Image (cartoon, rainbow, N blue to C red; front, side):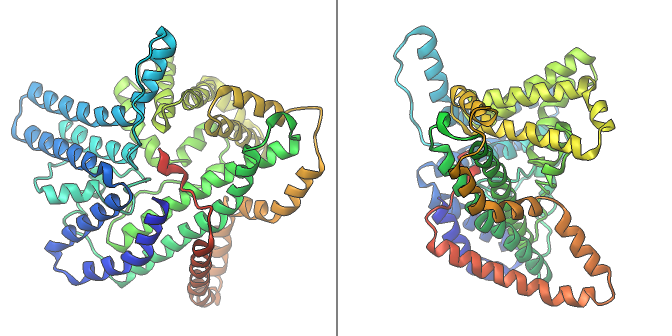
Length: 467
């Protein structure tokens, strides 16, 4: 899928954009729909029908709810829609996990349904569910045109890895949007920024984690362990935020404004703040459609803590059918409950550097749990990180020398320092003229570098495609 996606963007995007700009307004959604379906079926032809089937059910449920005022009938339509959406998600993503649990718990030998995971199913399922839930709540108008609705579900820029775009965020744009030279230029700039994050930073720093992850954890030094997981910490950020920027840039080219998905999360001064800055659209979805309906923080302290635990365990499970993801969600639930219980006030009184360091360390520990398949591997790696026997060895010094500059770049690029620097240059009298010349030149150079890298690269994973 990675090769297919990159090939599509490099060779088909210009053609799609050209045709899109030339056709009449009433045909633009048809062009986007064809492009989206082609993009998805190219990478996942076997499960093309899953997205179409779930879209048909949700579209029909929306039409039905719009035609009746009976709350019972509306609720029944919503239930049918959610059962279909979550049913597809369960069968393809979680059925194997459930069978494994049953076999281990009861000693049975039920055959495991090893079904390949349809790309992006977790993302487009949540998007489609937001539509029917908001129709039931009467928070958005029904979409009577199936072409327009399927265009929303299959928007290729963010179809396979987000950001999660709720229907009411793009409802108006589905029928009335502007795409011109300015929006194409702005979108291209954002796309190149995201591409550079993913190709030039995430891929290169991720190679270090791949190497360390394949080693015997009991034999590595403390420095090697920390360098390895720090590499993954930056890899997953630049990979996912890079893809989100690419998606937002592509959307902008076609006249859509997709929501921001990352806001320099590693600068956070608490875990609560981190989750306001990381994967913003996922957090917003769970807050709107699960946390608040459960009662949010309106029903007392104990119920608030319970609601947080439910939301975060399910957030972990959303990422994957594995106990390490469930534990990862529970880990964050515990940290957030501790902060809600009063620790957040302690963090506010600490020097910003100290609270940011605390938050970053907690996040790094979370990434160990997130990317290692078993809790046994997690504890072995944690032991290596905090061992007192072998702090440094020649191999760890070699890794530090080899990747030191890349780590410095990751630290700088993950903060808002670049934006502040550009802002100061722009504010000066001649700064605007300098930026007007330098910015396009830098983008062209980055695009050429990315293209050269992709032509020759064998290591090019998109981490969030598997979720």
